[in-house]
Length: 273
Length: 265
Image 1 (cartoon, rainbow over the protein chains, first blue to last red):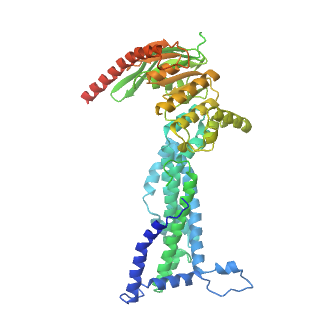
Image 2: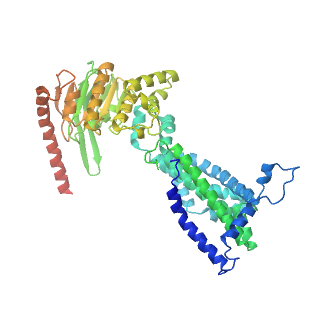
Image 3: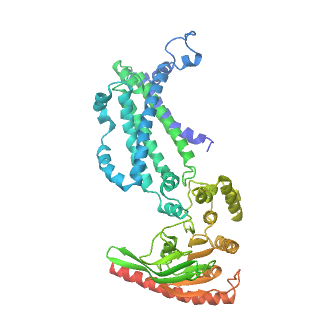
C-alpha cells in the first residue's frame, strides 16, 4: 500500500496537464480578458505571493516560524479550519448521543423523528438570516451553520448504524451473558462504527462547504471571505488561488479521514482497498 | 425428579405468518442426562434449530417448558453456551478478545482472564492467531474461536447449531475429532443440530430424528459404537442406511409440501 504506483500517478496527470496547457495558451494569446481568466502562471504567482508573509520579519517581536506563517493564506486557512473543527465537534458531538439514543430506543425515535425529518431537508444556508439575528457577526454564526451542516449526516448515519446491527451479534452477546449497557457499549456501538464513520465523513464534507459560504457573510478572514473580497477588486487570479487552496485543504481532510477510517475499521471485511 | 441435565417437556412452538400458522414443534419430550452428546437430525424445516433456540432461551416455546439443571429456561445465558453456524464472532475484536468477552463482562480479574484465554487458545491450536481479526481467519479457524469463546464460560451445556455446516469435508472431520476430544475431556452435555446423517453417527451418543412439520420426535436411538468411529465400518453403514430411510421420508414430505405451496401461490 505504501508503494506509489507511478504509472497511475502519471496517467492521472495527463488530463490536468492538458487543461493547464490549453488554459495557458488561451491566456497567452490574449483570447480572453485576463481579468476574466488570468493565466495559470499568474495564478501560481499570486498563490505564492498570498502564501508568503506580507511584511519583512521584525526580529524584536517575531520568531522565524511565526514570521514564516504570517502570510495571509496561512492565516485564512487556519481561520477556516478552526471554524470547521469547532463547528464539526459541536454538531457531530450533539448528533452522536442523540443518534445513539434514537437508534437504540423506539420511544426516543418516535419522539424525535418527525422533527428531524422536518428540519433535515432545510439546507444550512437557509439558516443564514436567523444565524445573524441570533449570533450577530463573527465566528458564532459561522460555527452555528457549520455545526448544523455536520449534525444531520452524523445523526442519520448513527441511527442507521445502531438499527442495522446484525441480530446474530446480539444473540451471541446475550448468550455470552451481556445485557443492557454492556451490550450497548461493547457490541451495538462497535458494530455501528462503520456507519457512524461514513456519517462523520459526509459531515466533515458538509462542514467544509458551509464554512466557505458562512465566511462570505459573517466574518472578515478565512478562505471564503478572501475569494469574495478578491472579487470586489476584480483580482481573478487571487480568486482562483483561493479556490485552489480550498480544493487542496478539502483533499487533505479527505485523505486524513480515509487514514483514520482505515485504521478504525481495520477489522472490517472488504476494506483492504 | 430425574437427574436429567436438560428436560424438555411437552414443548410446542407455533409461528404465525399472516394467514396461516406453522406448527414448528409439537409435544416434544426429551430427557438428556449429564454429559450426553445428543444430535438433533432432520431435513430443513423440521424444527431442530427451533428446538435448539428454545433450549438456548432465544425463543421461548408456545407451550410446555424446558429446564436446565433444574432451572426453568426463560432467557439466554452463559450456562448454555451456543455455537452458531455463522460463527457470530465479533469482527471488531481480535481472536483473544472474542474469547475473553464472556469473562470480561463477568468482571473476572484480568490475570485470570489471560490464563483462561491462553489455555483455550492452546487447546484449540489458535495460539498463533490471538491478535488476528476474524476476517483474516478461515471458516474452520473461526469456528474454533467460537468454540473457545463458549468454553471460556465453562458452561456445562454446549448448544451447537450446524456448527460445521459451512466447512469443507476435511476441515469438518478435523473439527469433529477436536470436538470429541474436548467433550470427553471436559464432560459437557452437548446438543448438536445437523442434517448430516454421517456427522450425527460419527459424533453422537444419541440421535433424535425429527419429523417435518409439525416437528416431533420420529425416532430416538442410542448409538452404541466405540469411538473414534470408523465411517467405513459395517455397523456404521447399517445405521446410516436406517437413519437415511427415516430422514428421506421426512425430506419427501418437505418436498411435497413445497410443491403444494408453490401450486397454491
